[in-house]
Length: 554
Image (cartoon, rainbow, N blue to C red):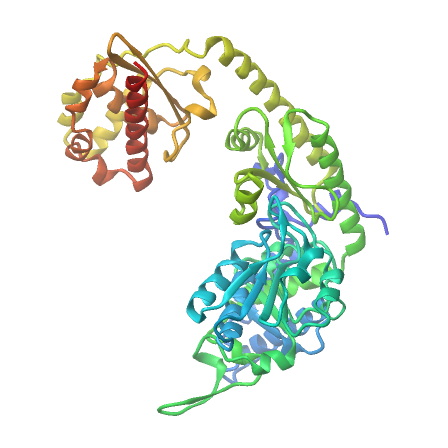
């Protein structure tokens, strides 16, 4: 069966909206878009059968209960579980992993060990750390090279105290897809509980937990075209039976006595409280949607895109690839050689191209590899060849502008023009009778700050501002002068306030000022958001640091 990304994409109404007509969506590792069938299922639930499950015998409650158990059966088929009892609904992979860490570790002895890897999402690290601290357990990591786990060396960290091995089925940061069959072979002769974090895996290939051989598998619906806030945990029935419950209340009990309670049978033992029933209806529709697709053809299309992206970026001297095309779920991670990853993200956003920049909840991997902040483009089956060409062209345009800026910086690094703050009267700002007046005055002050593209470089970026701001400094004749630029009028206005007090002054004059008190007296700390208040202080700290460095060099 041939696969058409264009036809597949037409099933997703977000792309049909006028404001999204040019959208190139490459943030699928964070969340996928939803087909019309999923949106309709959520809507139809609220229109036709909204009621709580199990707790009443009326018609709507029966219909709602039937829906939930029908979705449970579909989920069991989705992962090829033996029984519907092996499916526990939860809010997503993060909650499922917390459930497992709580329940499994509560029965472990001090000194027992948990094995994870540096490629894990924080959701598969932090719950184990919390449980390890509570129960005095030890966490061990699969050997790695520059942060990349060497899963073929898993046996090196297994011993008689290993109780749990919890590993990603696919890295959300670099797309690395471990060889699950090889891991299964490594674990064949040890008595451990094996968990697969399938949050990224489920969207890109058919899941067969019996073939994988894992004891537990977790996933989130929003990663595979379903709604957010819902997912499920697969667990072997015998293991789930032996585990203590996690949350108490609601349907997880069979009876309650004054001092003790009895617990319900599987799967309800782990489903306390009211689930997100509309989201469950959407999950069922997502499972139906995927069952109707040619999953193999979808995967082949995604792999074609991701290999093409890797090939093009690898050939460019302007980018450094972090990810690899082989054994990759569908993620390209890289950093620009010139300019920052954040600069590139804003550049792409202006062209309606959605990617993600950051550590991607994988700080261990980023820190070990030396690439804590990367650009991540992640594909889905609705991404077209045209999407990829548009993305690559935008990258090429960015590089051209950055190279020009580098040349300008080399020859004009100190050529910025000083702004004139002498006409900014503090008395005028203070005389405004209310916050609205002072806010308008700050916006007027922002006009004094001229555009300075020549200072927009990573080394001049002020960390801590809500919007990007760049600040440079020069010292001449014992006086300190500053150049500021930002795309935010509010940040420019706050910067103008700061520089109106310190620009052109000596160290002694600046040291005599109480700038935080001034900020407070003007009522800015009371009315500005916390992030903008932090921005003012970030500018102030950067200016003081530059003064100290300039003075030390004299």
